[in-house]
Length: 427
Ligand code: ACO
Image (cartoon, protein in one colour):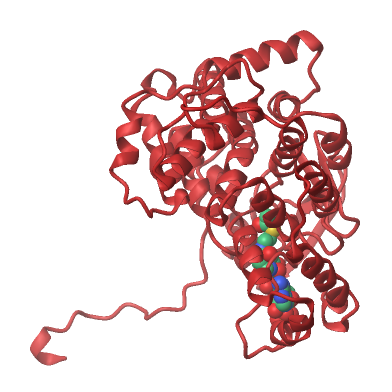
């Protein structure tokens, strides 16, 4: 018998098994707690709760480590491609050359959208936020691909997963095209996943579009950095939605909705807006004071993380990618100087040091994406595009688990106890 955790409650003693993962904190298995004690645990925000067992992604927040299937994010960002990392997340191992070619061909074959989906876009206002369009269109995919929504069938799950990963760039690029009033550009399957996305976004039918290799590489790396991140809010949303047996398109639409929030994927948009508002380095101290003021709701966007209490390893790669993009485009942006100075000042301020608040992946990503040409409203869309593979891999892992149950948290009820209805003239 392994280690046990002891709990005394209501004058009785109980023991709960301690389970060990391959690395990381052990967990106390409290599945029998309610049946044995009549008590629930209370952990709003899941700060001490492992919601599932997973073999996909590991984060050590104190050390600033992020591993996908064991491989460090820095190595994947430098040496892998988004397609290869996607294969790794979905299948557990890096592919052979043939496996990678087959996977790339499969994804490429699914890039087109049902033509009728284009009419969905025309139902949106021109100024609709592209994330609103993404939620709607991705949810609508389930109405178009009935042939792959039997979630009990592994083959169906595989086809849906490939469809989602393949169609996301097309859906995202169309959301952008619609907002700028340009015609949709159909996929060109002779290009890479990322090159194709850049062409569908920035190309126009009237001209040849030339993909700049350095930008294609930078964009692909940004996709790798966002591919998966353990049980974050949107991934947990996808798992919870999927736990009821909902189809994968609906589940991913739910994940997109969650990602949109400024505390999560929306932070890259908020971080760039904040840097624009700060403007010049001389104004930074004022904003740092505001961020520290408990009575001011202002926070340094792109700073802090629920899990990382050290430099987010993705932010390190982002910063070097930013320099590469500036070099390739022969541009610079004064906001980069502001960001660097803000980071320097914040990291030498006791408030940020004591609370272990470091730049996260979103701090630099907005500056890169705007240098490439994306408007701020597209930032979270790009995050959703890349995170789709993580969502799909996590959803598949959950559905394949024979012990999977519907997710159904309980609560600490603090509302009125039972009372009798009063007629309106007696209130
Ligand atoms: N600026 C100023 N103070 C902050 C910041 C910040 N960015 N982040 C946290 N703090 C402070 C909090 O006020 C709190 O102080 P207190 O202990 O005195 O009350 C303390 O640090 C802990 O913060 P919490 O909000 O309790 O931490 P939590 O884990 O719940 O939140 C979060 C993490 C949401 C990321 C938070 O740091 C934040 O809002 N950051 C800005 C938004 C952002 O960049 N989000 C992107 C996250 S990464 C991603 O989704 C890809």
